[in-house]
Amino acid sequence: MSTPPVPPLEERLIEATFERRPQALPARERAAEAAIALLLLAAGVALAVIAEPAREFNAPLAAAFVAAYALVHRVEFQMGDGNLVPTQVVLVPMLLLLPTPLVPLLVALATVCVTAAEALHRRRSAERALLAFNDAGFSLAPAIVLVAFGAQTPSWSSWPVFALALAAQFGADYVRETVRAAAATGLHPRVVAVELAHAHRVDAMLAPVGLLAAFAAADAPAAALLVLPLVGLLSVFAREREARIAQTIELSHAYRGTALLLRDLLEEDDEYTGHHTEDVVELSVRVAAQMGVDDDVRREAELGALLHDIGKIHVPDAIINKPGPLDDEEWAIMKTHTVEGQKMLDQVGGLLASIGVVVRASHERFDGGGYPDGLAGEQIPLAARIVSACDSFNAMTTTRSYRKAMPVAAAVDELHRCSGTQFDPEVVRALVAVVGDPGWQLAHAEAPAPAEAYDLHKELVKKST
Image (tube, rainbow, N blue to C red):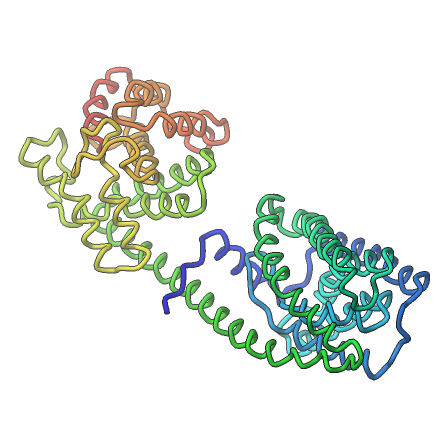
């Protein structure tokens, strides 16, 4: 069975999460987590002291459920910046079979114990026990709802309250995780919402399983722990997923390493092309960010820019370094570099094979007059449209041995002139915004070229080199 690829954003977040686990909390994150912990602790203690439980406390039963919860909490499905833990199958029975007001504190005890054990084995920083305590905060909202509406024991007539409790859990989750993400990683609330949507979808499917276990064990609460074999099955799936994610990240690094190696080979073959490529990569990444494209397109633009000229390895040096315009025969040979680049990347396969499509299309024109396939408009991959404009702009504004760089203002005029014919107008708008940024101009300042250099570059733009 094939496994769907991990989206670039999720891959990056997962990798960052793995790296942070053994590290101490940054001061800002530690302060935010401490504040959240104090609020949750105060609320949990207040609920336990003030609320009247519907069941008497049974220490052995509570210990059994805490141990079961700790066992389930070790089953983690990594999802972006956080993880998905199938604790609903145990939490719901705990809420209905134990004294409900005490459950949030018992859940916190279980999660802290798990994290403390991992800290002893140096898999996580000891400070991250604070995170574990706050992770347990999701149980507070449903407990409050059940207590408030007098639905602390299994009863089919209370199903609207049970649904409300689950909704309260999801709402409190969003508020808490948005605050935590802002303090720890600066993630946009929209990204947090997408990640939580995955987790809540699974929780919504597992909650009925826990509810059925609670009803079945109403007279013998310990019987609810018979759901643990299901958790064992989920544990197998979690380990398989983690292994696949690790392989995906390793493979992604391998692809990127291969791309950098190919870039180095190109730079060794032609120093100008190598440095030009680095500049086009930087510009393409900035333009992609300016356009707000998704992470797939952003990665394609980055790697496409890195490798857009790789096929020039197959073009004779005499043509690459010719000090002047190419004749028709030489130009025909030069135009084969996009096809040759795709062939090279197809041989590597995997992610770089998909980047080969961008490389092949990097000299297409928006009006269909480019090469090698005469694609037009949105037939051209967006990443290729980005690379094409950034490639041409950098070529126009770079000094070579036989010509001087065009002034940035003149190059921008040329971009506007070719917008809608050679270049995608949306890409041009984003590119002009990027190169108009004072920070970019300061970092890429170059001595102005004489006005007569302008005519030399018209032909350069026209041919998209």
